[in-house]
Image 1: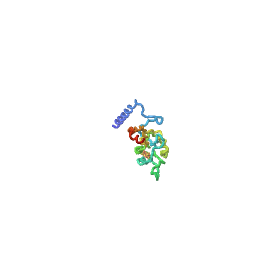
Image 2 (image 1 turned 90 degrees about the vertical axis):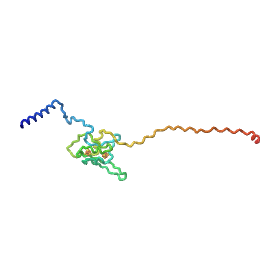
Image 3 (image 1 turned 120 degrees about the vertical axis):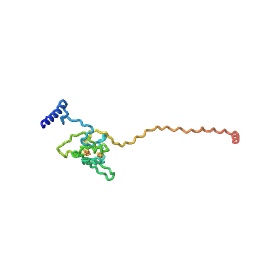
Length: 189
Ligand code: SF4
Ligand code: SF4
């Protein structure tokens, strides 16, 4: 009984092997050959910069740090006592803690953080998985994205309106001088 079962399993295995014999290989010779990753695949997290100014889009609102379930994001952005605005001084992502969930990108309203299809960042040194703001920006520079931020645009100047001079008021023609009274002329003379 046991022998028959073994032969049956062997034949099932050979059948599967036979089905793939005529097909081309689906493996690739990595790292010489690489897959083109889908546009929305979740690889490393990067910081995005403004396409015109090159400045980071991040406003230091801290939403991504609060949304991160693993505590992989650390932001250093002290608040100004007078203006109450935050100044971005440091932004760190620990790729060793990141679980590639994408919640940071979803939380950001400023097109400032994005998951990219890039995936090659393995290292034997754990501390090298911690990327600072400079590195996050550099890796994100060649990442294309649709800028959905609503930029403040100066109101367009109103088009010049041609001023038509108002028509001159219609005035009555001067009244004719009253005819001289011949009797009065005689008196004066
Ligand atoms: S992808 Fe997820 S785990 Fe990684 S930094 Fe963003 S929120 Fe955190
Ligand atoms: S990356 Fe986005 S969500 Fe995170 S602090 Fe900057 S602006 Fe806020």
